[in-house]
Image (cartoon, rainbow, N blue to C red; front, side):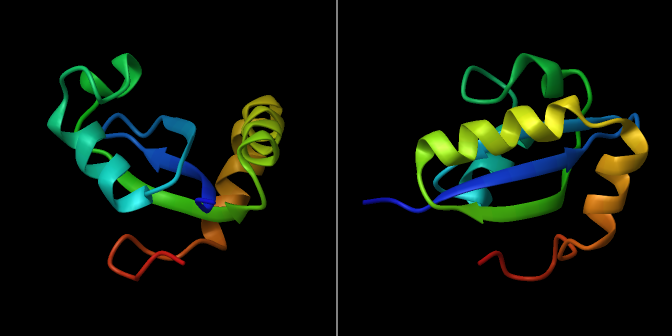
Amino acid sequence: MPTWFVYILRCADDTLYTGVTTDPERRLREHNAGGKPGARYTRARRPVELAHCEEAGSRSEACRREMAIKKLGRDAKLALTAQAPTPNQSIP
């Protein structure tokens, strides 16, 4: 069973994007490459960098956490990113 992650990206225009994946490094490459695998939102806001990543127990748990993060205000999301590894650090 794959490990699921919830992640927050900081876009070039300083906006934040939240998503879920089983491979954060691959997903970051897809967002920065553009095209179909990347999200429409991030295509016009590249480059993006990983600002926060956390492990979830399952896909449904990851999706619930993603929705909870999306409901947070910008300041609360920035507080989460302050606790996160920098993009150069390895992702769990």
